[in-house]
Length: 141
Length: 141
DNA sequence: TGATACTTGACTATTTTAGTCGGGTTTATA
DNA sequence: TATAAACCCGACTAAAATAGTCAAGTATCA
Image 1 (tube, rainbow over the protein chains, first blue to last red):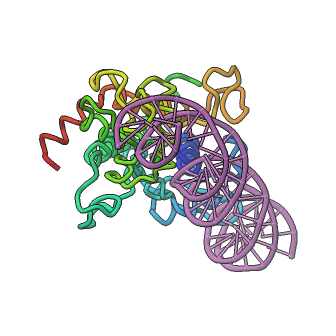
Image 2 (cartoon, rainbow over the protein chains, first blue to last red):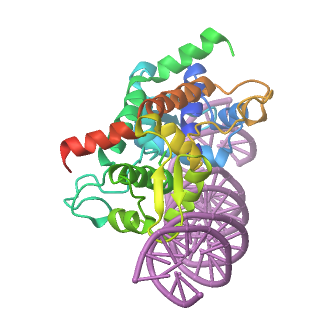
C-alpha cells in the first residue's frame, strides 16, 4: 500500500506553488529546482492539473503557473483525482453485479476494504492546500 | 495508492480460516477453493504467517493450519506486517538525518504523509480478525 | 527575434506484482 | 509400511505499473 510519486509530487509542487504564489506566476523550473523533481515529469503533472482547472498557465517569458482557485478550496482529493492517484483496495468492480473473484457473492472482506477506502478518502477530503501551507509556515521548516 | 493482493489475500484467507477453525486444521486446498486464490500463492503467504506465529501448521494427512492466537488478538497490523504489506507514503528514510530528496531539510509535505500513514495504521491497529468474522456472520453473506 | 516557458505525445528502463514451477519433507491412516 | 494428503521452500518469470526521458513543437514577453 503505497503512494505513487505522481501523487506525492503533485502535492509537493502545489504547496510550493501556493507559497510563492503572489502576483507573478511560478515557473516549473523553479519548482523543479526547489523540490528536486524532474522538469519533464513536472510538466506531465501540471498538464493534468491544468486540465482539471486546479492551476492556470501563463505562457511566454516570465510565465509559469498560478493557482486557479483559492488554496482553501483545493482539497487533496481534487489533486489526487487530477493526477489519477486513486485509492484502490479491492480488485472487484464497484457496481458489478457479480461478486469478487468471479464468485456469486461478495468476498468475505469486501466490506472491510470499502471501509478502509472511505477512511482514507475522508482524510483527503478534509485536507486543503491552505492547511498544508499554514502548517509549513508556522513550523518554519 | 493501492493494496497489494498479498495483503488482501492474507486477510481473506485468515478470515476464512477463523470461520472454519474448529478442532480440525483447515487445509490450504480448501481455502484455495473457497476463496479462489492459487494454492501455490497461498503457501507463500502462509509460510510468512507461520514465521510470525499468527498460524500454526499441522503436517501430514488431514493436516492444515490453525490460528495460533485468539482471533481477537490478531490485528490487521500483525497480518500486514507478516506479509510485508507496508504503508508507504514517503520515499525518505524514517530516521535518516538528511531530509527528503537529499535536501538538508524535510520536504514541504513530510508531515502530511506522516499524518496520513498514522491515519491508516490506526485503522489497521483497531481491527481484529474477530471483528471481521463477526461482521460476516452477522450479515450472513 | 531570441529566449524563456508552456504543450504534448511517444517512448523506455526499472521495479514490483502476482503469481507458477518443481522438488522436497512430514505424518495420518489404510 | 506404503501412499497420499498436506505442508515446506527456493527459484523463476510474465505482465503491469512506475517513474521517468526525449523530442518537437507553440506562445509570448522583452
